[in-house]
Amino acid sequence: MAIWGRDYFDSIFEEMSREIREMERMFDRLMRSARALPPGTAVTEGPYYYGFSITVGPDGKPIIKEFGNVRPSALGQLTVGAREPLIETVVDDKENVVKIAAEMPGVTKEDINITASEDRVTISAERGNKKYYTEVPLPVAVDPNSAEATYNNGILEVKLKAKEPVKSKGIQIKVK
Image 1: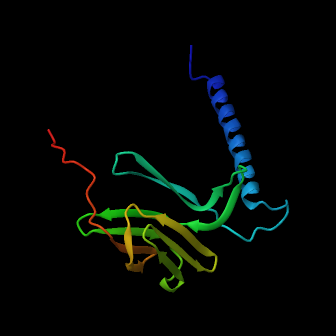
Image 2 (image 1 turned 90 degrees about the vertical axis):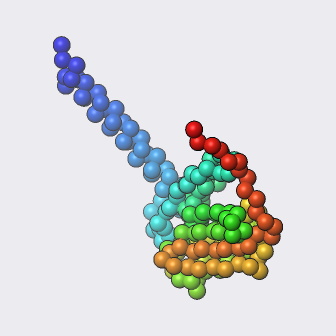
Image 3 (image 1 turned 120 degrees about the horizontal axis):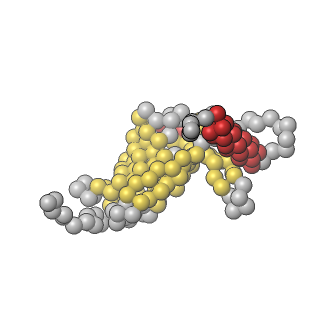
């Protein structure tokens, strides 16, 4: 009585083939929806990017941030626009600053536009087919006049001073 007979593997390969065909259909629907163009029309935009990062917030809860240039719309279709760069925001309570790092390869520092208010930083850049845009809500009020920015190897770093001293929102935990 062999468990590993031909029938066993045939059923596995048949199921895998069904799943692969379904994935191909899903990808075709995704691409048609993302393009939103009539069949046979040439696509001049792209490539398409989508991703997410997961970090743990100060309260211990996960924070999920999306990035890329493909977004779901209210109608369930995908819209393609400027890429939203991968962003990381850190509040440094020792230096009393908010630091923002944005991944934006393919542009130069002359292509980057940054505006800041007390509660938000807007970043945009465009060079050729590389277009970036994001609005970063800030976790604490900042002095927009204190903003400093550097760009090196595709990474934009923005540093802003907090208006009031930043207090750590944690307690010391003793390790046993």
